[in-house]
Length: 625
Image 1 (cartoon, rainbow, N blue to C red):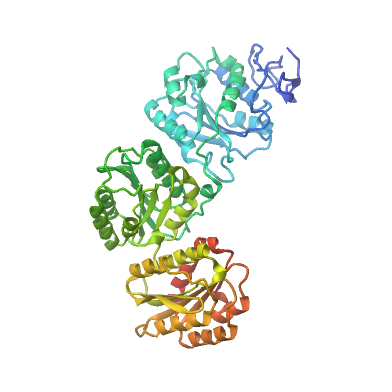
Image 2 (cartoon, rainbow, N blue to C red):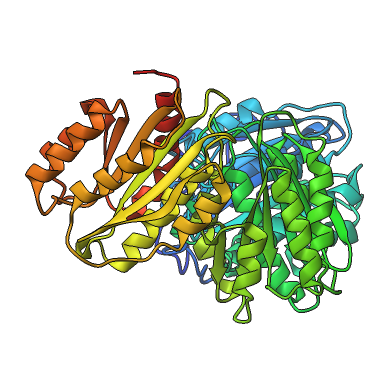
């Protein structure tokens, strides 16, 4: 034993670690009264391993779930505090390696602190020992794990987990769970996210098989003879945590930073997962994870449901506005391992939408491998969905896709996302979520005449041109029934992609496949051609024109003159400049006012700004000239 100052702790060199540790009350002779235990505790011997593999380089994020029932005897409760003291003063904590968050639970779950609340292990220890309270109640382990599941702990964000970290939950139970079966379900959700669960056995009253059900690995159930021996498992615990793997399915940076949908978007959405035998159970899990990420990006209040389908559809999550609940239930969607009756799944979703709130934008996200058992039935069901004003966003994965059928099901190529392999879904989450968020409608008001003028010159490049087409298709699709739309592309010459029409869906489909001209930049011709189309608008319709360009026109004087003609016609013109080469003076000349000029960083960012441009169009229609 080493005599140490009970307040400051003692400096001790741990073999094989090379770190001086401040460890009050662990493996040392301690003045027990001064550390507030008020009881005589024997010396606690801590078995130090020669090496702990993650001391210097691996990030570990741990959530403690502490059962705080008053069935704990007073001395056991104080011994638990002693264990926590040891936990918060080992070399890992307070360094860059390990961070700790904690909840206590009994009849209720109480958040104690998150990963970022304290800077030092001393602060953590003082906080947890002052906040922990005994509770005369049961062991509601499921409620605790659910709280961890839906909370910020293992979510991206300032209070959540770090990317690439090993993630663990340590459950400290002193009796059997009162909700064991439900706890196993919640544990399964954590495991599905790559989060490890560890469970020390604190006394003989706890069923070790029940703990194994939670951890899924008997070696992660660590036994002690009594509470007083808890510190003896400390290094075994951390050795096991350090030996664990970080989640292999960690979302890529792109997936994890998917831009949330604007809070103003009123979304009703259903997710349909292809659970047929051609997909496979492991690939099916990738589909479900993709949907969970999208659910997280939806605005609060979104109306959500999900279902898997094979021969028949099976509900995973009933319609709800509770995102956390939908996320959990969706994660438990079942693999069907049967045929691919996509049409039945679409009709099932259409029936559910009959109960959706009025006025929301209705979207089906259809996950498929592109091999529907009955192609004709699928196309008929999709057509009926479109007639019910439901948009189908198709996410098609595999190398045997029927592109023609996918375009028919979604109604337009801009609503189809193709992924070559299921393992790539995570890296495409940003794009899929973007497709969902960009589907919307302007508020119901007086219909308008809208013209889109798209730069198709050589400086844009073919790949960037596709971003412009997709953004334009979303803007066209956002228009209410009764509105007129037309689309013009320009380079050396100007061409009408879509003549002035009220067939919004057909125009969106045409613009999504418009030809790239790869020529000079005759913006003036694009403006004049669009104006000719707008002259066909019925009297009383508000005329709006949007010009997309990446630079200066070939003939600036001609562009200025054409813009004046558009202004004189009474049309409101929005100028969207993309990239760093735009001529700001020319953009202001094209636009009706300086407030109608929009600068976008690059073409990829254009899709992030679709909602802003739709808002601009919606606002224009409310403000007559």
